Image 1: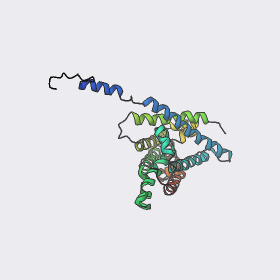
Image 2 (image 1 turned 90 degrees about the vertical axis):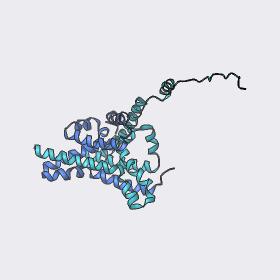
Image 3 (image 1 turned 45 degrees about the vertical axis):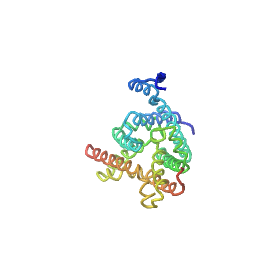
Image 4 (image 1 turned 120 degrees about the horizontal axis):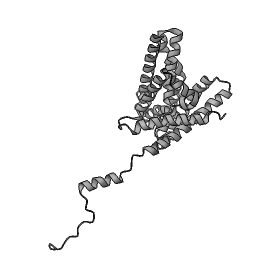
Length: 155
Length: 120
């Protein structure tokens, strides 16, 4: 037993070689794939929004009002699809394509609120609705007030 | 019925690509929430500079459906209200112009959160 010559392990790698190998086999950052997906899904969502704008114009709304109504409709659809569990599936594929449109904003409102319902309707649903919407409103409204100030003093 | 669909697709898709690059080229601590906050503030600043308006003219929903469009509407509302009622308009205009969107988000968000159970 003792004098039996041991076969050299067939996989002999130095730490350096191992590092190089892991680097070789780690999936490359899939930025280009993500970008294409974001473009397509984001484009489709905005096209649906445009369809609603066109539809509301045919109902007799002026363009700005039709645009507002279309945004509200897209918020409704984003919230509904999140409730149905569909939007998160789209999100896995689309990345920013489903986050940046207003439907993603609706998703960021419904998803945490739904999750935290067991903590009650006030501190659960009521508070968690604003997990992301809160910061968005804070920075959005604050920026608009600063813009208003600057505009006031320049005119 | 189908006018503006292709411009909306291209402009909207491009804006989402900017969001994707923001996510992929920054640290993981830059979350989707950070993307949304950047877009709303960025849209407001671009709106104030008059850069976003042409994008809305060209892209329609492609520029108004992304959250940068929400920022643009906030800034536009604030500036228009300043014209009408002075400094008070800086406070009222943004929220007034986006009131439908904010109210819809709160109302539909609440409704769906209560009506559905999370999966898994």
